[in-house]
Every structure is written in structure tokens, then in C-alpha cells.
Amino acid sequence: DAKTTQPPSMDCAEGRAANLPCNHSTISGNEYVYWYRQIHSQGPQYIIHGLKNNETNEMASLIITEDRKSSTLILPHATLRDTAVYYCIVTETSGSRLTFGEGTQLTVNP
Amino acid sequence: DAGVIQSPRHEVTEMGQEVTLRCKPISGHDYLFWYRQTMMRGLELLIYFNNNVPIDDSGMPEDRFSAKMPNASFSTLKIQPSEPRDSAVYFCASSFTGPVDTQYFGPGTRLTVL
Image (cartoon, rainbow over all chains, first blue to last red; front, side):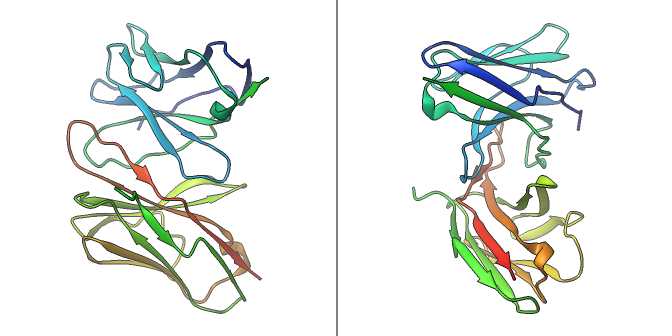
């Protein structure tokens, strides 16, 4: 699986958009970009995934650059409950193992 | 759906004792994963099963660890004998093979070995 690089921490004001970057310059053509988050003391939670097109669901939007070497997870209106560690993972689908890095600790401030 | 169920939620034991962690995956899911999370090593995959068959156990730290999946609705992770360095949060996750392969995690078991 391709390696990912994320900033260790970020802050965001409540109600503002949170933009979390991820670099994955060695991504291969059949690898997807997945985002999970882990709220303190809970199990990781799936957020969104994509291959090359931008994706949006009820939780977030995923913007993938045209060369697929980086992506950005966008939480459009961050709330205090979005404070968590966010993991960007690159992997193939169909039961592939997830390799969690250190992720980005997002702190949403009131 | 109740989601992935793990038991116990907390376990405190003494070094040398046997520990058994349990997991019930989401009904219909054909993959089951066991992860361990520590401050030092982060979240790491220990083993995963497909249709009750172990596929990759390369993450199992040593022979003291063993995992079984006797049927599609139950899996165990056993540590015998336990050591203080096994103290961690152990997560179970399950997924369904398909175009979207999302893993659903349980709440975890916090293990403390004294």
C-alpha cells in the first residue's frame, strides 16, 4: 500500500470548514483513498473514500487532485464532536488490510 | 443492526493468566479483523479472516497470541500467557466484500495486564 503523509495536528473554529490534507505521492492506479476518524476512546469510524473523482456524503467531501498524489478531506461545518484523529489510508478494496498511520489530531474549538 | 459487538469492554488480569477476547461481527459480513492499539505503536492489524478462514496473521506478535473464528458470527483472540506489554485496546472490525469495502469497528476491549 502507498504511504501517506498527514500533519500531526490542526485546529479549527466551530462552525468553520475543516480542511485536512493528505499526501500519497506513490499511489498506484488501483488504489483508493480512504478516510477514517477515531474519536477518543472509540473505535475508528469510516468517513468517505474515493478513487479519482471528488466525493461527497453526509459527513464530508473528498477532493482528490488530478494526479492523485494528494487529497483533502473537508468537513464543511465543524462541530465540537468532530474533534478526533483523522486517518488517511491508501489501499486496494475487497477486504484489503488497512494500515493506519499516525493521522491528524483535529481539535475543534468553541 | 447492533454493529460489531466486543466483550468484555474492560479486562484486568495478572501476568501469566490466560485472556480471551470475543467479537461478534455484523451479520452478513465475510471479513473479520483484529487490531491492537497502543500509544507507542498506534493502531496495528494483528490478523484477519475471510469466510472464517485466517488469511493473514503476519501481525500476530508471537505464539502467545492465537485467534479463531469457529463460525460466521463469532471470533476469539486469546493471549496465553499474558504479559504486561500486552496491555492495549483491542479492536475487532468486520466488512463485506463489494465495490465499497468499509470496515466497521467495535468499541474495543481495554486490556490491562498487571
